[in-house]
Image (spheres, rainbow, N blue to C red):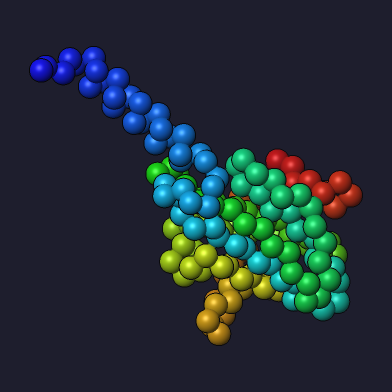
Length: 158
């Protein structure tokens, strides 16, 4: 019994199609997806409200306002075989506007272990894990030139 070349190609094509379909499935039992990642953002601004707007290239979480000690959170499920995840946020208080890459997979995947806790201070965003705090610089201003942070309609415009 000889298996034809076209049957082999067809079988491989079907397997690849199933694999790609599973890659985009959002089910809990999907073996082709990583565990959910939860990002928690807590305001540490005592004298003012913190406005924030987080997104990635595909998902916009909208504008939110936090008082001192309040936390906003979102979650996502990174894909295994596609490009690394990157989520960024614009932060607004008084007349200050800052931007920060709140989740960078190559930076945060191993250190956060699925739960990234950020405290937002006026001077810097700080990652809090296992009793340790590591603060990072805000994104450079020249990287965000021309961007506007709209408190009135909750948008981040480029």
